[in-house]
Length: 154
Length: 154
DNA sequence: TGAATTTCGTTGGTGTACTGACGATACAGC
DNA sequence: GCTGTATCGTCAGTACACCAACGAAATTCA
Image (tube, rainbow over all chains, first blue to last red; front, side, top):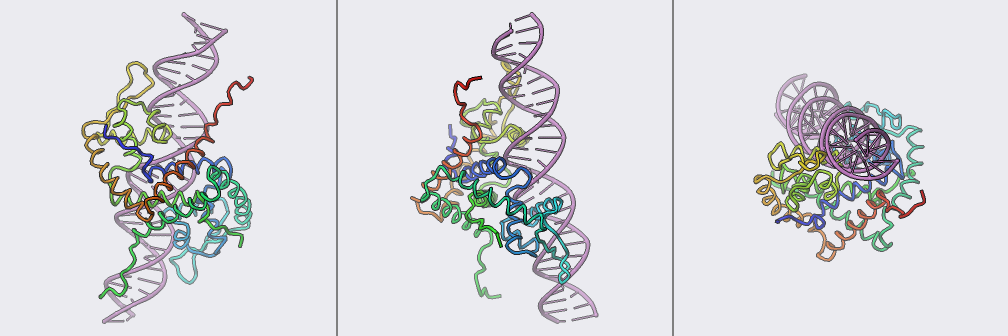
């Protein structure tokens, strides 16, 4: 009887929250384009010509995962991918016209979905909610890449 | 330039939050037993003898996922699995002695990790945070299983 | 009692998401 | 110039997480 109440565990709640979002996205936004795919597409609409590593930084995905998402977006002709002529290691990505259209369409639906998703909270609670999540996520992410103790004597 | 600011999208933040948690779990709790595995184990410590479907309900996992998690826990001899003699469809699950020990050990570490995870928030903010996540997740989950509009005229 | 229906677990398919290792390319210092 | 190092993308492996479809077992009800 040493069991724990998971409803006080932020990690467990985070997983449930993400699943709930997945559900809602699937029914209200798109069944073909997933939320991470939209995030990548969105990053490329904002800054066409990014390489994969930088895209990953922007949306919070590691290199392997970006590679897979990019391959799916490419298979649907939503983005183009070319080797950087100035640096043979990089692949440069940009949305196709189809990709731009898809992004515009999904932007509208995503906004609607966010409203439904946050509907159980008052307007004030909503902004608190976003702020708190962001601070926790940022802090934990920071633990991974510890800030270089500047001017460490080499 | 129609790109969107993802930091206002709860779904995107939920994903980042979960990844941050995954990271922290891996470094502070266990590299072998994952958070969903702990959740299942915890449910069985609380109520030994549950069948897979009910476990899934308790921790928020669908039947396929429970099957995989259960198979991994079984492979490590942390839980036992037997056919229900009274209902041949069910598999009854219970923790082994090893499973009980592992659960005890992880419970301590999990508590420590939760503290670190929530450290960027004040005590007051922490409880608000947990409450808000839970309400949003519960509401979205409710959308999936709409309450039967009782006595719908067939 | 016997047939239609429901329920449980499994399987196959898709899509994140991570780590670790690897080849190719670029760059740094000598 | 040449060698060691760092970086980028890929690949293999593991682990969620969902849906749809299926067989076996149980239940409903005609």
